[in-house]
Image 1 (cartoon, rainbow, N blue to C red):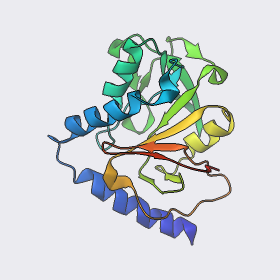
Image 2 (tube, rainbow, N blue to C red):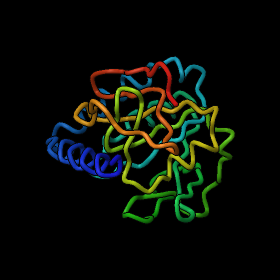
Image 3 (cartoon, rainbow, N blue to C red):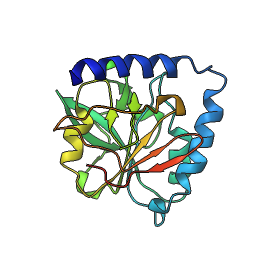
Image 4 (cartoon, rainbow, N blue to C red):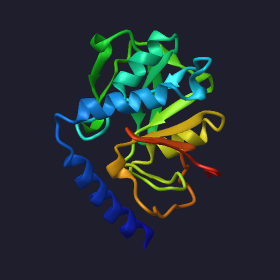
Length: 192
């Protein structure tokens, strides 16, 4: 039952975020950046795992540029196999290449950063629940990754339209500790 329910929620949330007009997206990303970069989790500046947004996702780039200007080391994921991610430091867009699923990722010649060195992980998602539950695209990449990084702060980034009332959680799912949208910061009391 939870697989069917997750599929239904995924379809609903994807349709909601696809309906956001293109001209509104940069404004919403800037608003999210303002909220995110003011969080106490970024003072002092930790190593931050970001991501390169797809056309549907809220773009974390304005926030990541701001954090980098304050001295945070920003790293990005690279898919290394089924369900496996490593993080690389990149020096600019010239160090990116197309990866699986059409998502840009760091090239192989960029420096790898140890997962233990990452203090904050920014997570994309299709939908987020009030308890920190998250639905991605179903590959399980971030759930596997977060099991290896129990001390990293987990922050989900989303448009407000991606917040739903309930997401069925499975045993392997790892919740975010915080959800940041263009209009709010939701701190989760007990993220599992």
